[in-house]
Length: 342
Ligand SMILES: NC(=O)c1ccc[n+]([C@@H]2O[C@H](COP(=O)([O-])OP(=O)(O)OC[C@H]3O[C@@H](n4cnc5c(N)ncnc54)[C@H](OP(=O)(O)O)[C@@H]3O)[C@@H](O)[C@H]2O)c1
Image 1 (tube, protein in one colour):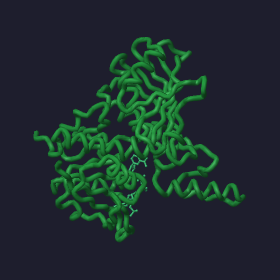
Image 2 (cartoon, helix red, strand yellow; image 1 turned 120 degrees about the horizontal axis):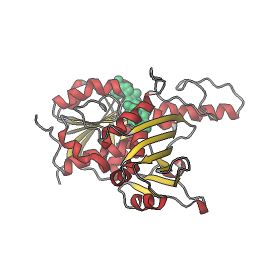
Image 3 (cartoon, protein in one colour; image 1 turned 90 degrees about the vertical axis):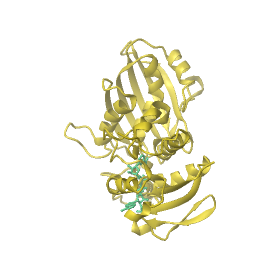
């Protein structure tokens, strides 16, 4: 089997370190692995398949000879380096928000719109974590009974903000328990023992950018600009795993049993729905796993064609590193690494 020269940009970060794990766990065909980060991390040692690899600073020369570059170092780094990587012949899978809504860039969840990869011009965007886990179970339902409207409230873990936020929750928790004063650095307010309805910046329409990503990205991935979406995104003091309460209005009536039947056969979805024994998805148990878990499926008593459900996934895996590696695997499998012409 052919193997590929892979680079990870942002290898020292929350998502970057998960990239390394996912490549190992899935036996990705790696010929060589370059681990790139900022100059602050140059010289640091990380491990891939028990082999020590020295982290290098990301420079325009970093991509010479690279076949696949996995980016997770923020939107500014992607905006600058991804086109340079493409110029030198690499296919880029980008985790940042930089290219997601660019009409020339496919935004892909392999379970939903794998064919979109084919049209890439060098960059394929990985959607936002809260969008990915919502659309994985909603798309198979949408195919049988078109969705008209989605109302989502999210409970997003601090790992979604990166390593600094994980440290902040740990430190603040200790400080509160020890009766010390808490000074927030990463978030606007204390996150320990608190919930914050602010993820990313506030926009002129009073939504946050995270909420707006769920509106725009859902439509782009599901190829349907008519789906109405409204989201409230909330940061909660959980380390890993995003949870979402989602109300979905369909064109026609659908029973919870019918939704369960469809979801039990849907790729990437695991049903976990037995209230009698308190069985429902939880962030704690989803952490470190690959599936999107769905439970608490019930009729919306306020609308005859609507269902309510609870959706949980590991935001670092399916929400970021895993989804990106799945995109790269599909590109290899279908011989789509090279950009399409036209
Ligand atoms: N966390 C999630 O759930 C999630 C989900 C989807 C998408 N994403 C996206 O993935 C990206 C990374 O997120 P994260 O959570 O992994 O953040 P993180 O833990 O803060 O890591 C940031 C990474 O970017 C690197 N970096 C910073 N400045 C750089 C520079 N000038 N040149 C090269 N590398 C640089 C850092 O390297 P140093 O260690 O050297 O500073 C580090 O490896 C973001 O765009 C984020 O929006 C995250």
